[in-house]
Image (tube, rainbow, N blue to C red; front, side, top):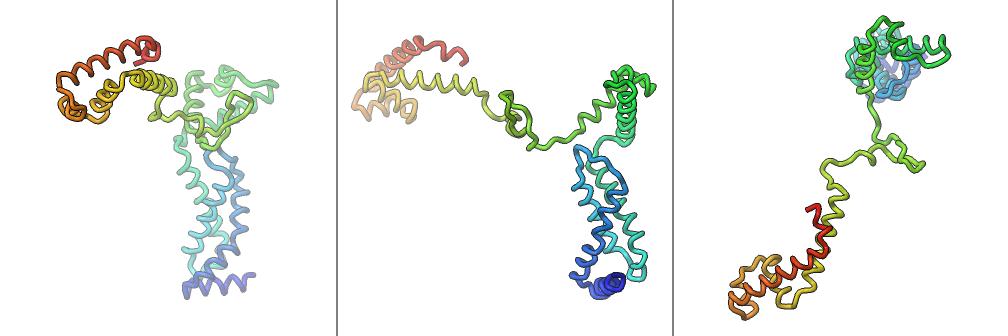
Length: 257
């Protein structure tokens, strides 16, 4: 194995052989899992085991690229440090809670577990604060700060209230979307208005359509209908009165307007 690795190192470092570099990465990949396992890191909400392994592999590749040919026999010791450092950096990048707060939170959780084991039940906030020699409000502040940092996946299922679950993304309201109740009211208003217009006489309906939908002036409408502008104005006023009267019968749909 060492002879084969030595040849791969020479091919990569002396000739820049990309295939040799890939072969080295594969050859030392078991070291990645070994280092991560030895670190004994508890999976977190924002960083699971696959994420840890990804950062570890990045550390391995960086170590291979930076290792001198003369030192390849000591590579594993050098790579362990680089892999461990890459994993720690990855955790720090993903965790935006200050390290002091995170360390205190870990102490809180350890004490919570100890008290629960001793008491045979979950410890209260006051009991936990007393054991840690912390003010209860300070304890609540620490746990709240960490809780706010938890990252959720938009694909995480949440109860829908009917015994089933939906994806978190489907339960988040869109601030730009119209309120469903308001949309129903608007549709009802439009239908009531359309119904009132449909009940007008043909000339009245045509005047309303040309005036409000085609943006024609009363004079232009008169030219279309071969009527005087004054007559068109009378038709328009009559149509509006009829529409208003009919909408009063459906006044409840306009209460939200």
